[in-house]
Amino acid sequence: MTEHRVVSPEQWLVARQELLAKEKAFTRLRDDLSRERRELPWVKVDHPYVFDGPQGKETLTELFDGRSQLVVYHFMFAPNWEAGCRHCSFWADNFDRIVVHLKQRDVTMVAISRAPYAKLAAYEKRMGWSFKWVSSGETNFNFDYRASFTPQELAAKSGLFNFTVQDPHESDREGVSVFYKDAAGSIFHTYSAYARGIDLFNTAYNYLDIVPKGRDEGDRGPYWVRRHDEYGG
Image (cartoon, rainbow, N blue to C red; front, top):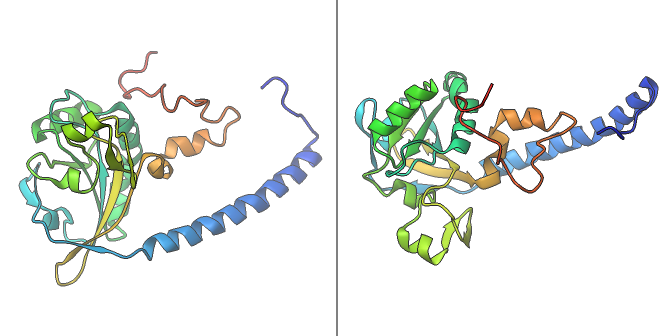
């Protein structure tokens, strides 16, 4: 950092304008990619999933809460864990307060985990969040959408995660899935992303990407992340 190139304001402006051209090209490419993402084919959801949450038992249809689009954050919280994943907690800090805005665009967002609802509610209270969080522990939802893995898959270090057969490392993994409900009430799975595919959904990382040190993680990933009530001074 101490040896970084230093120039005059005029030279900085030229360099910034050159970078701006690349940023605009990237924005256009991102718009194109977003359009292709929305044009992916859909898969009809026929399984009658039932979840446990703050309103008691609710079906997948009821999770839409009167809207036609549903975003699900696959929050890593296995049934035998006493706390939610610290990295998923980092992501939750970023999406908790935007749920009200999403509702204005016909989008409902919820988090889903396999842990019993009582554990989810207690942890959410500890973290001070307000998003809706339900348990899929009595269903195959997490397994069907490749956010959880069987003991056999873990033992074999072989499961379909992030659209590739690989070692999932944990019984539960992070991800985002999207669903659409048409006027007739039919539900369709439209999109899922996992691992660094959900990178864009973390606003804090987007800010870190513009500061001089960047994420400053090397090849270690988010080793530094703690739950927001666990950071020292």
